[in-house]
Structure formats: C-alpha cells, structure tokens
Picture (cartoon, rainbow over the protein chains, first blue to last red):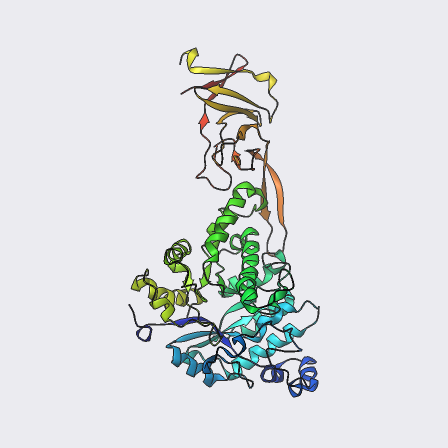
Length: 362
Length: 125
Ligand code: FES
C-alpha cells in the first residue's frame, strides 16, 4: 500500500469557503454597493443562510454531531493560509479550488446579474488573494452559464492566468440541461483553451430539485447530488457534446461512483431502442460516459467490495480523479484511495495524482 | 446450386419498396425486404428478445448533422441508408448489413437473395 505523503496527490475538488463579505469588494457595480449596503452581515445572515443566493437545506454538521476543526464554515471565510494548512494536514500537493458559494447558483432562476457579478468578483479575489501555482493552489472558474456572453467574458478574463486550469458548471438547477446547444459557445471556447469542464453537483435547495418536501439531509444528500449530476450526464451524453467537441475533457464531480454503472446500463438499453433520437452519437451513450472523468468523492466504500470493484472496472481507473471535497463535512482523505484493496499501487497513484496531471495539464 | 437449395419467395413485381415477406428457410424464419429497389434477406428473430424484427417498419435512417456551435443538429432522413425496426421494442438494423444502428455487436444474420425470371428466392445455406 502506498503512502500518500510520498506520492503526488492532486485534489480535484477543494471547496474554498469564500464569503460574500470577501468577494463583494471585487464585484462589479451595482452589486458591490447593493451587497455592501444591504446590512445582511449585520442581521447575522451567514454564508450558508444567505439572502443573496438561496439557502441550502439541513444542517451539514448533523446538529452538532460532527465537530471537526477543519470542516467548519468559518464565519470570516477561509484565507490562503487555511488552504495551505489544510493541504498539509491531508498530505495534498495540489488543489483545484472551487467556490463554495457558487454551488448555490442553481437556486437562482431570475434573469438578473447576481451570478455573473459574483463570479467576476470571485475570480479577481481568488487571483489577488488565494491562488498560487507555486504552492500548488489552482482554481476552477465558475461559469455563469445562464448567460453565455457573461461566461465568455469570464473565459476572456482567465485566458492568460496560469492559476485557472478549468471551469466549473454547477449541475444543480441548470435548465435547459447542459447538453443543450445554448451552451456550445462555452464548450467551444473551453476546448480551444484546453480547459476541462468540471460539472459539479450543487447543494442549494436540495429538497426542491425534483419534488419538494423532503425533510432531512440524509434524504436530500442521497438523492439530490446524484440526481443533478445524472440529469446533466444524460443530456451531455445524448446531445453529443463529446462528438461536437472531441478534445473537450469532461469531468463529473462529487456524487461518488456507484451510480454510474447503473446509469450507463440504463442509457445503453434506451439507446438500443431509440438510437435515432441521439443522431450525433457514433457509439453508445454509455461509451461516452465511461470516457468522462469522475471525481471519487464521496466514495461509497461501505458498499459491497465486489460492487465497488465492478464500478471501478466499468469506469476505468484511468478515468478517476481523487477529490477530497475538503473541508466539507463528508470529505475523503487520500487514504480512502490508498486503502482500497482491489487497486494496484499503479492505480492508486494514477487516481491520486497522475490522471489529474494529464487532464488539467498541471 | 440446385433448385432445392433455395426457397421461393414470390414474384418480385409484388413487392413495393418497404415491403417484407416472411419465409421459412431451413428451420428459421427469414424476412425478405425490398428497400430502395433492392432485396435483402435477414433473419426474422430479434437479438434483443426474439421479436419478429422483419415485420417492423422499413424506412430511411434518421441522421443528424451539426452545423457548428450553437446550431441545432439538423435531423433528416438519409435515403441511402435503410433500416428495419423490430416492432416489439424498436431495435433498428441496417437492412444492408444486418447491424444494429446503435451497436454493431448485434447483427441479424443475412441471407443471399436472387431474382430470377421475375421470382425472388432466398438461398438456403
Ligand atoms: S425483441 Fe426486438 S426490440 Fe425487443
């Protein structure tokens, strides 16, 4: 079994706990002033209960059951030092930072500029204060995909910034789903720039994704994350994004891996019966899906070992990327991968770091 | 080849494009299909679940062409490719090759067809 401290570990999903207070000074007007004058901070509104972006459901810390120094959302927000310490704590060499707050963007359906203004502020803030390729701290740029022009602006902004190595599309709430031609210009540009598209599930209004009324986080966390990734995978695969943009790297993050073989099996069955409804495809949709990359977290290690082995086999260990989701309450440390008995050391090293080096060109 | 090695299907003039006739060849059912003026013979047993595939619709294949980013995929029927779709669940096969249009690992066995003196025959081998 390998020791993560002796090998390259790339964490493809680190959640930077940004706050609106931190990002607001970098936001374009009028949102900067709107936010700063709102007094939301003074009313005790916390980042996980915000009037700016809709709120998440349930208490992530299980109403006090989970107490961990590194997994709190600090009221004041993270700063670069927190990232450095956390990386050291987990023996991680390289992280790809994902905005924590942007995961709630799916809850916004208004045709306003909140998401765009937040993203633009976030990018400047991260470049100025946090990202640092010399220390292995890289970023993924959120796409305000409701608005294609704004997304292209963001891609223009980061084009010469070494610190951004890909983009994030939040899967929760994207409507129409992300295989729609509407998003082609984003994909085209990402392919051109060599930016992988990381589809990341999201946690805003988890009780509202498909039907309202779930009561506890155990329900919504089981279903919501899977549901929002699955719905986008089906759209991206069937509408032929991978055929249209053959050099685009596609990564799905944060729903574990055990749902993938089931989805692949089902979509292939459907395709045999209705192939002509996906006329862009040159092969079965499941064959595209298993060419996508998948973040491993939260890995369902308590599933039957033979099931997990089958899943790894179907997806391919060359398609898996270690992700911690740190500092979230359900983060996976690298030992989740190093402890898996069915993997060879080569597989472990690839999942922990080498695959990501290739995908993100690190 | 002796006359016994083949099965008579019927007069070619009775087939319109898209018509199929089912005949027994040896111990199996074979569908003889006329498409785009040509005759094809395929085993009438769907690899999915045994459905009478050749009794299904015979029609041009719907294909997609993409004009570029942001364009709708233009979907149109390609008159050069003809498919037959199993009436049970819709698996579709290229009548020229017998291959499933979505997964070429599934193939309907093909048989030789000849037209002689206005009659259509399937070779039995
Ligand atoms: S039996 Fe032919 S499609 Fe199912």
